[in-house]
Length: 255
Image: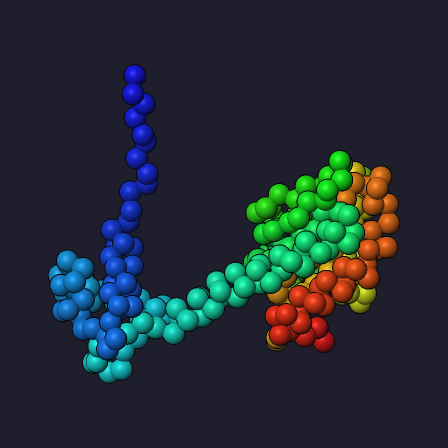
């Protein structure tokens, strides 16, 4: 019996049309009017006008007076964010490799998100016993070294008490204790955990800054607790790597 392939999700027509408008404007050197855009994507002018008004309000398209529509500056901002992150990961890759080779432990790269940092790359240790970092896994702000660095340098608020879940018997579950820990991380410039997310994993993490002094990324080192009993012994190597990546980004440390 032939197995039928399940169809993918149906596209939303209005979104597809809006994207088609952006594609047409991207292909135009001088901009396009409503009627011409409507003709090119196969809709009536009133539909094209509504789509363009929505895109204009979001800064995706723009026009001067009653002139033709052109791509908007918001797209430049979005493209810059994407390219900066791609460039960051490209720049960070050899730093991660060197960090793993120098320390013998798993090296990670995390990027700050809205509330938590997300692991986007890692180089696993070559040891027979390895602490693996799952890509796409969000940090837990109160229970990971990366998360503590995110709280200290990312400008976010401390999570409420109800979110301070105990993952091990060492997890910080009191907001005042977490505030004290985050202040210490900010003061010393790095974060550590000793079996706070996983009983048998210790870690250390340090911030990477962009040219405005804002948090751009977080470098981390993690390993089995029975081998990485004192992650602070790796601090100098980690800070050198973080400093090198900050410099490569044209960055500077946060004041």
